[in-house]
Image (cartoon, rainbow over all chains, first blue to last red; front, side, top):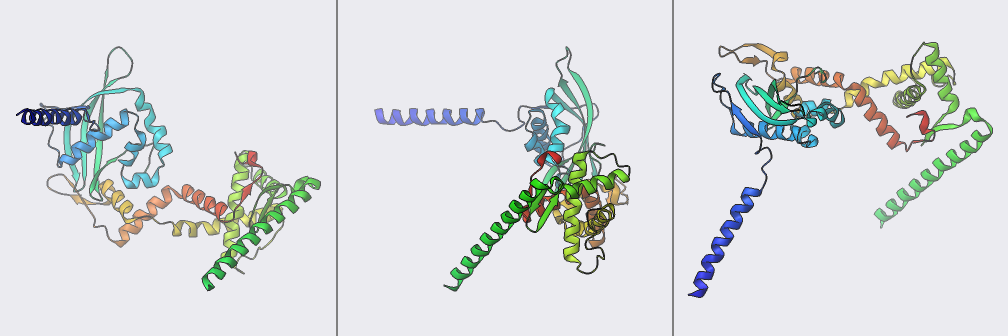
Length: 156
Length: 201
């Protein structure tokens, strides 16, 4: 009888342990808050994996994981531009804190290219957070979604 | 048994090569102490680049009203010395200017030969199909064949001709980096050691 009670107690303790471990494990970018503009009817992600990549990418860009973010850039970008040049370009963003992203629109530009319009709420150290409008492009290549930079700093 | 002997021979020849390189460098450096203009700036297997050579490049660029710094001249000089050497090695008898001495004409000939070798360096550079496809898919506007009724851009098919076009675009965009990478590979291949590092920084 005592052994049976002990078995149950052990099973419950193990379950709680597993749940706690799962809850504490950090999923990259999970903490980043993403909202959707209800008025403009933001559109839908064509692929759940793209939403995950988008969230993870911006989390990494703003949390100083520049090398990880670089790997998420398209392979043609990485062929053209070194990690050093990329680091020089993105490191200024690490100075701000990304509070939230609100998505306004998700459009298919072509069969393999998606454009995402969004606003970023950034804490720059000033009194009030600032809102920055931006547009991202994501390409499906070699079985995965990759970020596409469009900036005069990186002519293609 | 035979394999072992071949390996021993390889090791023996490598050892001889290293001894020869060091002997050349030590002799040349000793000579340079008595002749400062012959001081070695960089040297390696079958390669010696002296202060006199560097001064000849300096004089040549000055005559061209170049605004390059001393360090840029040193880096450029080493680049053309190595490119020219590859060109002359790979096109025996075609150069016409084998050795012009360390004067402006000689430097101009080396630069010309170095430039002639650059297309081969760029042609030999490998770009994977994954990179070409990523470029094609990331830039549909560049390869547009029109617009579909739903507003999406339709693109030309990625055939061999288009793949070559994209390869050319990428090569053009990174040609300086490709040549630099090639020069670094030659420095490593010929065990070139830069003695006067300050000149190149």
